[in-house]
Length: 138
Image 1 (cartoon, helix red, strand yellow):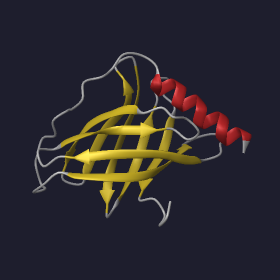
Image 2 (cartoon, one colour):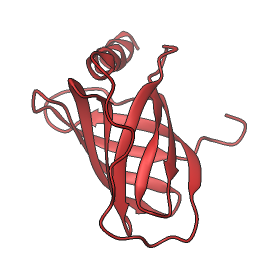
Image 3 (tube, rainbow, N blue to C red):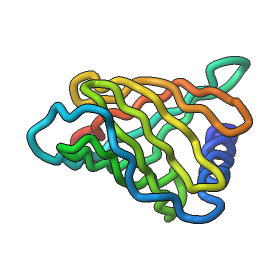
């Protein structure tokens, strides 16, 4: 449990430092008819080496009909709200969690109500990433 908390805190600190990023990035193609705001429970798991997956971060995204993604990420065990900006083209999504000086870049695919893909840190560390709807009552 300590390794899980330490890993979550390290990512939270890494993506939370620095100046504010622009609030939106335009996607190439629009394929939805209205904006939708969704809340997700996130999981990051280091893609190589020995690691423990950690979960608990809350990701709130608004996917606009124009293809923008805006929102915030609340790392587990913190009160921080870290900006999220990105875009969407059909089922393909990409977004940055963090600021102009330190971001975690996520690329993935919408699959039903979930997002599955990869997150990459500036140091090159790569994580399997998932964002799923919170459990009922959670």
